[in-house]
Image (cartoon, rainbow, N blue to C red; front, side, top):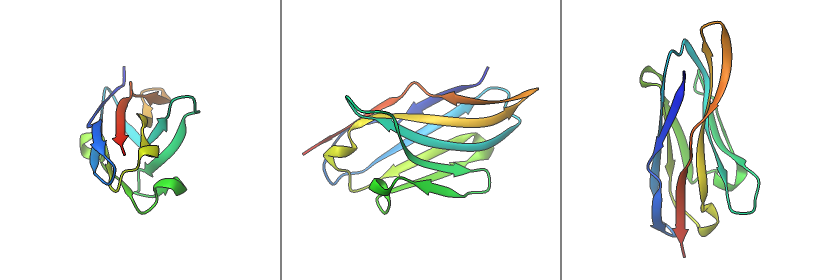
Amino acid sequence: QVQLVESGGGLVQAGGSLRLSCVASGRILRINAMGWYRQAPGKQRELVATITSVGNTNYADSVKGRFAISRDYAKNTVYLQMNSLKPEDTAVYYCNLRAVVPQTTLEVWGQGTLVTVSS
């Protein structure tokens, strides 16, 4: 069974920084991509950033230039460095994994970590 454990959320003032981490555990043969999504109260879940196995990244327009995604696939870990945070970044941030496991491929979501940005 593959699981994701996120950490690094919390309360920060506008303009501050946070770093989220997500570690995947279980029998993973190959990670195809990992990423971060977020869901603010009353809104749908949206993409924040993703990174593929070869390091290609994709960002939501709203976070470009402020957030940076990176990965250490040897440790099955993905990071999200968030700088210049704004109140509108407040949301539950979810880690996402797309991987190859024995006999199949799968997509897994973490439990979410809350990021609150105060003005």
